[in-house]
Image 1 (tube, rainbow, N blue to C red):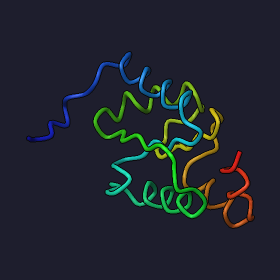
Image 2: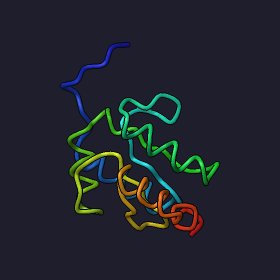
Image 3: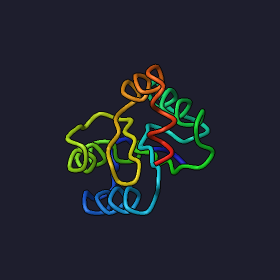
Image 4: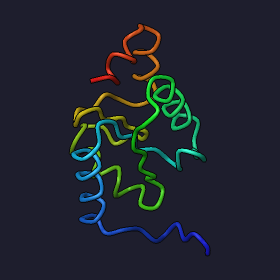
Length: 113
């Protein structure tokens, strides 16, 4: 199986994936790659930070349709950058915000919502 970077999912399908993931999961991370194989340092950092406080959370790999995921996520967060973390349907931030919350000692509390 080969990956064709010019292939992507229809925007409507990606919108549904994003909407469903945010609505149906207490914590969801939209990252580049998978939980076991993140494909960028920011995604890896987000996974590490969340993993310090939670064992269970949903991960959505955005690489299959990166531009469509950026568009869909921007509707929810106002940001098009990835990774993005949502807790109980609320946008928390990317890896930089997660790191700030961790340094301030607030990340564990935010993730226990």
